[in-house]
Length: 358
Image 1: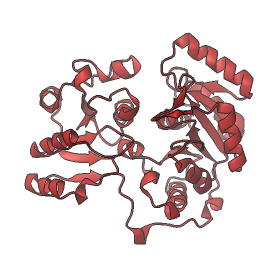
Image 2 (image 1 turned 45 degrees about the horizontal axis):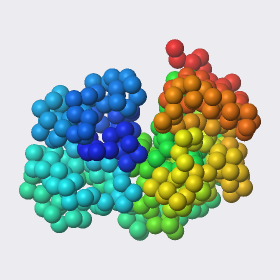
Image 3 (image 1 turned 90 degrees about the vertical axis):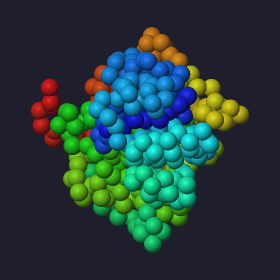
Image 4 (image 1 turned 180 degrees about the horizontal axis):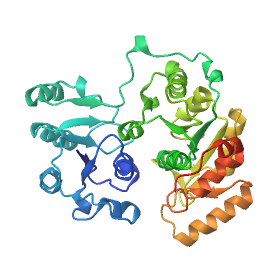
């Protein structure tokens, strides 16, 4: 049972870890979220307009009172660009440990290496899980080319920006395929998907550049050999055109996807956290992806931030006409539209699937 800490950021870009956990968590049961701005409201209602019974709380005292059952985990649900904790956040986490809560930390700052946190863990007999910590250097894998031996198709969900909904779309697509009778496995590439419960993957932005394609290749091969899926969905990171988040290059090289679904936010005027850099268009990003890698963009998915439902419908129609590929919003439109993208590109998947679950 877990409380998620997301002070000042729930529902925002830097709250993407908390947002993702509220929408889907296979590993932990989320019983409360801390964000004093929204205290007293329902997390699901704030995020997607549908109540899910997870309360938003003023502080940890409030969360411990309202959470049912009593939590034993405290998850860092913020994901700032720096990847580091503020002094206030450090105090909140140390307070949680003093109450006997184990920490799950997805930031670049490894708390097991911090003397103050290491001492607090020992004193309070709690554990700290640093999700982003890569393997020891002696255990990191180099790219081998064995990805060519993986027979099932890989579909990467990439985007035109960071924190734009790639993981959410990848998670929804994976679930929809499995519900249809197509065995799909998600390979996670960031801290949130790993916290949510992705069985295969690595936080690519914490892996030394020399090993990043090899670590992803190894994760995809592992997923293929252990799960024997019909299709592998690879979570994207950043954007190929992004000025600083460059994990998309490793995803395209390391997993060699046969197809890409591109996520885009039509109302964003500039790259998040980089206002001097205008957002790329879907057309320009598709051209970049298909020039950089031997793959094909098979569909566009929309992040509906700051859009009305009618504006989403209009954007879908416009992009389909402009790009000549299907488009949808994974969160607000039927998942059949996502499946249609996949089955149009890989008809053999639909043909070999058993009767879809009802």
